[in-house]
Amino acid sequence: MDISPQAKRVLVTGGAGFLGSHLVDRLVKQGHRVSVVDNLLTGNLDNIRGHVESGRIRFHDHDVIDPFNLAVDEIYNLACAASPPLYQADPIHTAKTSALGALNVLALAERHNARVFQASTSEVYGDPQVHPQPEGYWGNVNPVGIRSCYDEGKRFAETLFMDHWRHRGLDARIVRIFNTYGPRMSPSDGRVVSNFIVQALQGDSITIYGDGSQTRSFCYVDDLIDGFLAFMNAPRGTTGPFNMGNPAEFTVRELAELVIDLTGSSSRIVYRALPSDDPRQRKPDISEVHDALGWQPKVDLREGLSRTVAWFDAVLRSEGRSSERLPQAMAA
Ligand code: NAD
Ligand code: UDP
Image 1: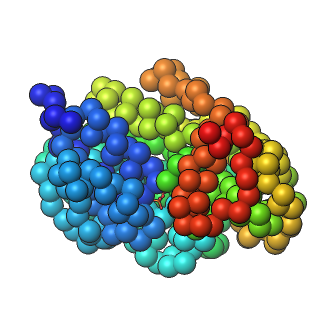
Image 2: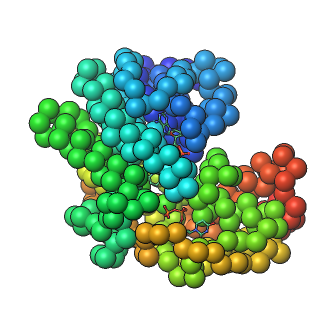
């Protein structure tokens, strides 16, 4: 792949993770000079190994809580564990990643006059009492609960981004990502889509937390990355925050049943305790981002899950861990 004449120097923090590595693929395809800063806390170098070994991207093993310098034109700040069990494993580090990571990334953007993008989250709405959630809703967040390190960290990062835009004229942008899934989620990161697919493919019990009536809205990764790129290419002053996600809402129980259907698994559903502060409902209002960028997701849950199941099946088979037989159509 050649460097395009319009090539920009683009930094992706967290670029070895699930979303970051898909973003890196697309930026490389567009011909940009891409660098990744990642401490591999929850990411995997294999996600970007091809680009690193071919010399198409530069990888820096670095923790964003410590300052760093690279010459850049654009920054996507994605570095942060996203799975609840993983971001709760070292909550102080998670809070530092959001707060100090944002400050370090913003300082870098100021130094090089770069456009800078923050991967925020639907978690800024906490356990929402307004449904679906528009950007104008301020949320219902427990500031002292087990999710606070992430929720409050991301909320503080949004504050820092907006104040750098308002007071220093920095070209800052914020996207609030709703549950996104797809190939390259870590099989062991504990999020619902990866857990259910891995459990189904291995013939293990599918673990629903609570009674499974809580809802989420699941976005396929390719749709989300389309949104990221459209947002970053919008004119200066397009700061957001914008919700990005697929507004089709499902209960966790419906998700479990769909995964069983798609995999043809013999797994049975078991019920486990609901973690504290687990949001009851979540669904993005995407009218603002649709009006501003014309963006909306295209891949429905059945189609996206089919692609994701096929990817997990290949990974687990290569590790000798898949015990179920996929339906003929999907195994092809
Ligand atoms: P992920 O865990 O796969 O990727 C996060 C990446 O950041 C990993 O490669 C990890 O090693 C790296 N990282 C973590 N802490 C770091 C630190 N202190 N310094 C350097 N690197 C660090 O998760 P993901 O799903 O790809 O999420 C990417 C971003 O999107 C995160 O900021 C997350 O909060 C946000 N987000 C994701 C979702 C989703 O559904 N996937 C939803 C809301 C927000
Ligand atoms: N969940 C579940 N079983 C699992 C993992 C998660 O029932 O094995 C539930 C979890 O309690 C939450 C929803 O699925 O209600 C989504 O969880 P996830 O960790 O993917 O993300 P969240 O949206 O909670 O950050």
